[in-house]
Image 1 (cartoon, rainbow, N blue to C red):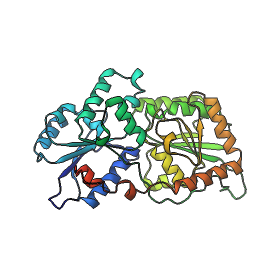
Image 2 (cartoon, one colour):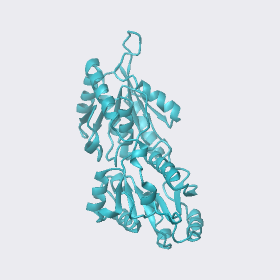
Image 3 (cartoon, rainbow, N blue to C red):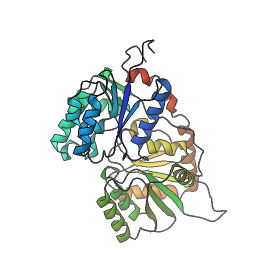
Image 4 (cartoon, rainbow, N blue to C red):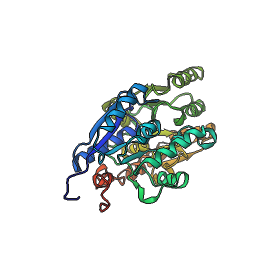
Length: 360
């Protein structure tokens, strides 16, 4: 790092950012790394960020940001840059954006999205001095869709903390054939396609499994109600459960008991929950979902994203074959040990955020 005084950094976030999302975990680990390398960023915390920042908070935020020294780097998730464009256009501070995935893709892609959203995202991306992304595919997305120069982007794939291997594929019932445990983790939002998961579950055998979906239930309450009603109508309510958010300790207990991780997202900027599955030795069945296919290579089976019966067949075939399930669990565990640590992910990140061109 430079011997001159460190560049001040402020981190803008909101108190309602769901703590079990991959974005929240990534951002939290980033702040830990910055604190260790550079000193703790100045926190600027909005009360409400989702689905939008209220007008009153926008006014107070504008005053807060305008009072910062002009060399202060503002680090924030690109979600806030999109929502708060007018606020950021009124200040001169350099901005570093954390770009997990495109909001256009979140809404279903360019063909299904209001063009105004794409324009706002383009403007937000252009406002950022530098952009931190979680996968090479996301970097490519920014270059292809928004013309972002390669030198403005840093790829830092999510890291991992050590995990205890779970019991995936093993008989945990003292010789009795107990139900196999399926798990999905992610906020209840349309992008996660839990409606498709319900379609898949309807084609699974009537017994021998249970499926837990862990994630923020408050992002789209109407969607959650519709999913729960559909589960009841399909007779799945006692086997497919939306648990809501869980504490880290409770979620770890679930991981230890999980036999198979299921993902059906429309799009993932990386797929942190899938990496978490590998770290616990849990095999994965997933639809093609953005960046996942570019990095996941052990203990993973790809399933169709438009044929629920065929996907259910892949799940059932694995659950009904203990030897194959155990083999996939071994592959998942082996691959999981090769994934990077958070220390590796964010090595030298403080200099990069501060704009030190001599760093990494």
